[in-house]
Image (tube, rainbow, N blue to C red):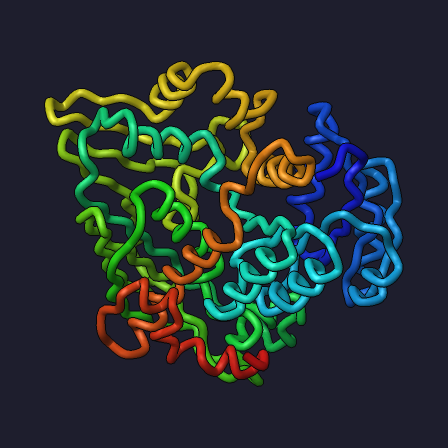
Length: 413
């Protein structure tokens, strides 16, 4: 808990760090800027210098730069760290930060495996430090309204089933230029943990749990139909996935997608309830991963949805969002959308700072919640590997870990 300006380190300067930086500028603009990025770290000196310049332009202060997080932790007086790193470094650097006395906001997925995620959650508990998993999609107006619809309002009745599928055209790599290091880690299972199932798929797993509750059983098949194996890497990432989920509530659903589909394209993101259906009809090819995502305030970037009732009448998601926000009262509305905030990245950073200041008990998605969503991703891989349904609880406990075992071994676990 602190009443003074929060001293923050930004560790990692890749693409996602840009989102975090813009969100911090938004917090300043909203009058919620009682923090300062005092240090940034990345192994790439050119990248860290460029990012320092961007931060100076955005926030009016140039942070000290480092290429070693160990040196930074030993040198700087810091309260917290924002991790925007390759997946395999989350537990290594996250645990080091917490052991050094820093609170940690960690980009998704929390860890590269269940075991690494558990290590992070346990370190947070032992050190008493805040560990927040960065999952912005559930914090946006669309998912907030749908969560309310399914769990409180029940305008559509009881959720029963869902069908989520999408196909994208295959885009082959042109030429034989080396794959940049900034992208290679995503293609290496030992550094990324997997492909889209646990990359953007982590958002999807978190959304499923947020909207519909806990999953009991997963049965999955994965393929690499067109992607092949990049030179020098040990395995190919999945480009085609078929999953069936059975929830503890009895809800059943399917998630299927192909990133290398030639010919006709198709998409359907639909939920069916006892009194009607809900569809995500946004103009967003990523909606099979990012459900009801708001990407901006332009008309073609705002989430679009359609409720269709049993009698044939309809209602837009925009109308549902208005009803939701009117129903929750001013205090709860300010809690969920402080000062009109709609961007999930901005909210997750604001919430993290509020926890550090002692104004909130804990993050909405702490280390243990992050582990639960990661286990749902890993259940897809574990099921696909053994060709059988798996209990998510068995994956979360470590009882089933054949897919993850080589990754854990690589990281010394």
